Each structure stands twice: as C-alpha cells, then as structure tokens.
Length: 223
Image 1 (tube, rainbow, N blue to C red):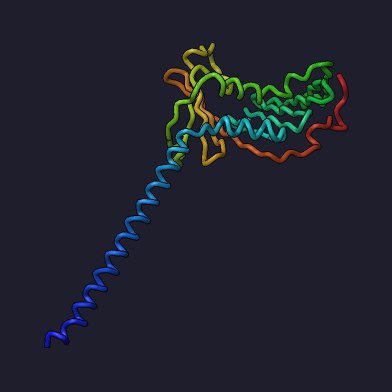
Image 2 (image 1 turned 180 degrees about the vertical axis):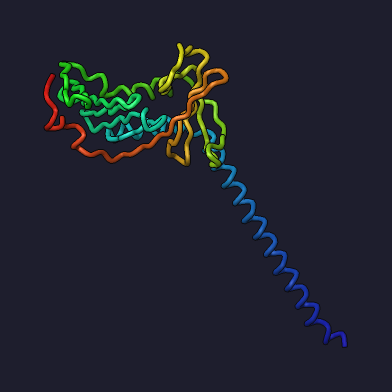
C-alpha cells in the first residue's frame, strides 16, 4: 500500500514545484514592468520637451507653427532654410512678412500691396531665438493639467510673456509665466499667466512647408 502512494506524493511535489516556478516568474515579470514604468517616468520627468522641439527646428530648418487665440487673432511662422513667412491675422487684419534674399517684404492684403525693407532679415530666426532664450534662461517647472477634458504635461517658465497675443494693459515680465502643454512630444497649447488672469492659445506644429508661401502673389503691386 505504501508503494502505491509514492506516485501520488511525487505528483503533488511536481505540482508544487511548477506552481512555485510560475509564481517566481510572475514576480520577476511584474518587477521588470514596475522598473520599466518607473524608469520611463523618471526619464519623462527629466526630459525637456520644449528643448527637444527647439533642437528639431534648428536641425531641420524647416517648420511651420501656428499660434491661434481665435479665428481673428492668429499667426503662423514658417521657415525653410534661409527663407521665412510670418502670416498674421490681427483682429481680422491680414498681413504677411516674407523674408528672403536678406530682405523683408511686407504684404498688405486689404490693398494687395507689398513694401520692401532692404537688408532686413530679423524675422528669419526670431522664433527660434525666442525659444532658445527661454530654454537657456532656466529649468522649467513641470506638471500636468487638463484642458477640455484631456490631460497634458506642461513645462512652465517664469518671467516669460513672448507668446501673449491679447494684452489689455502693460504686462510685467516679472509677474508673467508661460506654460507649454505637450501631448507626448507634440506642443498643443501655450498659456500665459498674469497674476489671476491667463490667456490660452492653441498651437499646431508641422515640419512640412510649401515653397509657394515664400513667393509674393502675382496680383500684388509694390507700394
């Protein structure tokens, strides 16, 4: 009778061994998952997304970024190498600065007239320079915030008001902060905070630019 019980005891030991191995493997897998998640969270916390975006803009020298408060107040900065286009709607008034050949051409759409400013190419690197100054000035404060029900990570810079579009009164740089909101690596919003007031603008970033926007329309006359 004792000999008949041995296979049963052996089978139980095998089951216990298999279960133990499975538990150990599961613990190891869970541990690895926890480690990877924690590592990613740490890397994301240390990553400067605005700096990454700036580096991409500088390296490619091709980008188009639209900043929009509403349909009547928005502007788009587009660049491709040594030419640029700054297209602006200010309370419905539409103007464009085209920078090329070292000159700036101001297009007035209401009269279909353009004006030439010789040896003036400041608009070519203006946006890139603004971002560089902001990034170099300080390490941003980081956090999360919901906008229209969606959660975004933000980087906040103190004393920055470069992207404020609708200032009703004089703005003090010292009392103004700016938050850049990202969905993954994509910049989606910018909020300028002035005391208990704030202005939120939407942002659309593209790295594909049409060459035609750097040409003066044929129906425009020089003023």
